Length: 133
Image (cartoon, rainbow, N blue to C red; front, top):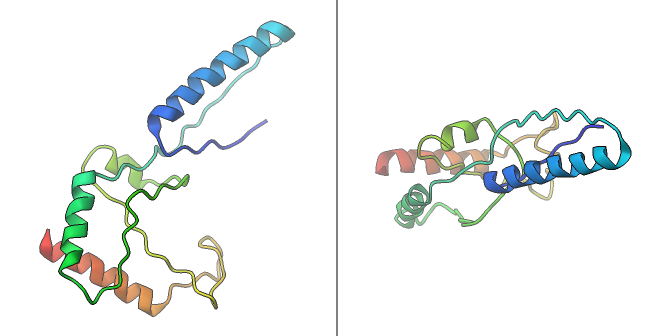
């Protein structure tokens, strides 16, 4: 049996594995079986530095032409290599909504495409942040 566990909080992830190991112990004891558990932890949950998020938001207040809506507590079960960095140094993962009525392909499909408007917004956002950090 195999599966994927995705949690947005590293502490909850550790608690889950602790409890899951206890459950396995109970099952082994009750059934006289031996269970081998292999855990490939993958990427940790992404940590967005609250101070950096605050700075990014303040920088955007002076950029009224850029239509950016900030979602303060956005969490995703997706893993990303970026999380290895943001758990060690100040970081923030920024996402841009790219789906439209005419564009319905998933992010991981070969036909997925980002609109030029979204690219302009993303590039403008990051340039504005670089200039103002």
